Image (cartoon, rainbow, N blue to C red; front, side):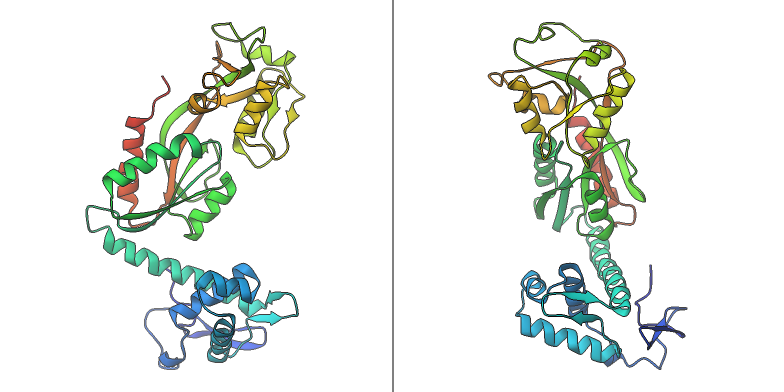
Length: 333
């Protein structure tokens, strides 16, 4: 674990001010403990860095703007450097401010991990549990996950968000999320991931389409169809594009700003067809939706649903157990 950023013996210079860097264990006598920023002040520094606005940062941490400004000034006094440039309508980080915000995040994350490590000595996950999912999974797979969490860890304080894959990974790495549902293959960087289940794709067609009554469809049928895709940033778009390329399909139509629900509504209106993950069928192609789904007859495309978390999270054993339980609950056979 990295050591706190104002502790050490080797000196460097940032923005013209002398600062000290971590080189070993212990607290050197040259550091006045009373001049260290407090944990709360580190939270304020991170809030201003994130929001680039004192008013919004103050609201985010639950203090008044004058109170936040006073605390930031006290941090700058303690450290002997200016962390932020104040303009009429904007706040910019100085070089020292960039460093301070980065290290403050690391310190706060380490403190959170300490608390979680102590919690992990129990048989339950307690306190805040922040869960994320990509939009093409959230409506269909979060309900069983949330139900399982509540059954296993009734004292966990759940909060749930939707993020696209890249944002989800960033949020878990930074500590703003604890676990997340995403689709593989995808570069999850240093996160720990456990595969839950392989989810096949089916072809979603408008009711009355010439292929709607077929028991299965050859992927090459996509060559003659107008395939609707999600916008850039959705991993489902990449998976669907790969299937189209394998089938020899080059041109696809994009529904800008669309969700999977909007995409299937476009299919129902006869605008085109799309690839639908099997887990979404019960919601998006339910009776009366005017959407029919047909499986593929060969080279069945799929994605792997996985649960991800930081490899260093002390609750990793609990999360691995949760992934195993989800694997037992979710099936697309």
